[in-house]
Length: 202
Image 1 (tube, rainbow, N blue to C red):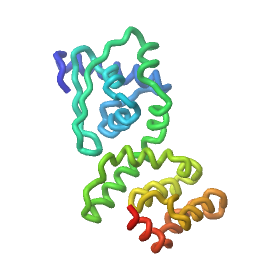
Image 2: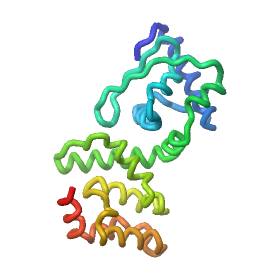
Image 3: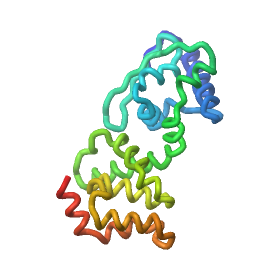
Image 4: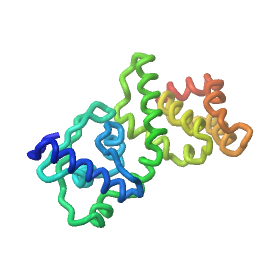
């Protein structure tokens, strides 16, 4: 962070920004400066620099490294009052992402671990891909959290599961059959041939 403010004043301004952002979202506080929270915020806007600067005091610039290892920068943006702040800062995607932040974080960490174990680089735009899969129409129909997690991780590893007829049928069965819910990861792991064919098609 680069700012003309002395450290004590800057700390007070950032605390106040966290309180205002939290209030706009119906929370007590938004610790926007935490690395993963900041990455989630960045991914919650089409033009993040036009929104995240609302969190900064005058003439302040913020630099951070995101999940993909890219350097992101945003600069202070003025606003008149808390009502204008909320209108410009809050959107439905931001609310969903913050609501699901813990699940998204665990998916990112697990995917990073899997990539390390397999000695392959973390895929580009990892968090963007995880979010896209987490919110896709099939994932959102999976009521069980472990099934949704399995859907995302297997899709990252092998490709879009719904393009394979056998895997697509299996996922639809899990969605519709309450007795199979919570077992998607295990059931997918038993379809090695279908997963292999899907992987080869990538």
